[in-house]
Amino acid sequence: MGDASAEVAIVGAGPIGIELAIALKKAGFDYLHFDARQIGHTISWFAPETRFFSSNERIAIAGVPLFMPDQTKCTREQYLGYLRAIVKQFDLRIHTFEPVTDIQSKDGGFLLKTQPQGGDAEYRVRKIVLATGGTERPRRLGVVGEDLPHVSHYFSDPHLYFGRKLLIVGGRNSAVEAALRCHHAGAAVAMSYRKGELDARSIKYWLYPEMTGLIKSGCIAAHFNTQLREIHPGRAILTGEKGSYELPADFVLLLVGYEADLSLCRMAGVELASPSHAPRFDPATMQTNVPGIYIAGTAAGGTQQKFALFIENCHVHVERIVASLSGSPAPPTPTAFERPES
Image (cartoon, rainbow, N blue to C red; front, top):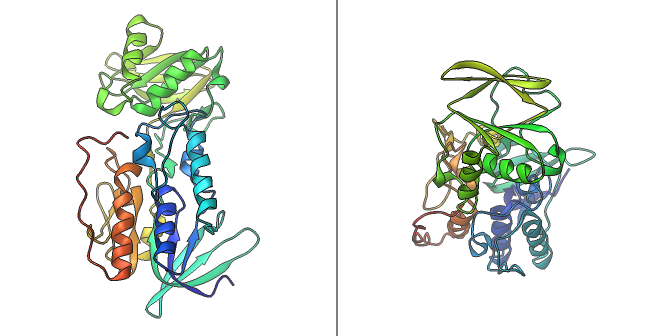
């Protein structure tokens, strides 16, 4: 049996979940905090030295500045270190590696069941905030060979592809960044993208010119208006305007996006609106259609096809939730960024 009870449970320890924990602690709430893995898990599977799209001030949390020694945008490693330092600074207790396995309504609150390492636990809470993120798992293509050993949905380290033929499927930011880094690491890179050209709006502005230049020069082979049909050891089959054809491929990276895990929303009875399965909630309070259950962070966008929610424009969720739990008026809506940087 876990801790007997608390006022609030936070599920998810990404940046917004951590920021909310700090706000609840400052406001005097008795709360519990859980994550199925380590803090900042989604960020931890970025490739080494990946830099954020957003400016450092937009991804800083809890009023703690995020400064880089070279005044550049923050890397994956630097941001994870920043999150660890904040957890220590504010003396946060987070139940990492303790997934929530069940949520039940009980006695005007909720019974929350978890599975810590080595057993099971139960907690009674009055309110729950789901801050489970929007990119828990990769989108799958459902093609033959998708689960072969040389195929991955995650870009881990460019060094792996040195001297090998690499096919990258996708044409948005993640795919472009992987293509550039692997090209510079000595891989022979080809890309397959279902559209006719790259869209500069979905690619980091400092990557787009270099990528288009390398495509025009033939250093990176771009197969536009194509779809991946099959993957086999050492080769892949694409289909395009001129029919199907084969490409040599020692490795295949399927970088076509990621989607939210909405299982806890469904378990708790939160309504999900199609087509993105976004949870239904009151934007003034972030409370869902289930009284006492709130949504925070990018999870509020459901499985976003075109991402609109990022760390940088989710900070206000924390203020709204704390105000609602405290019985205070909702905070004013902040001026929207003309264009999110993420």
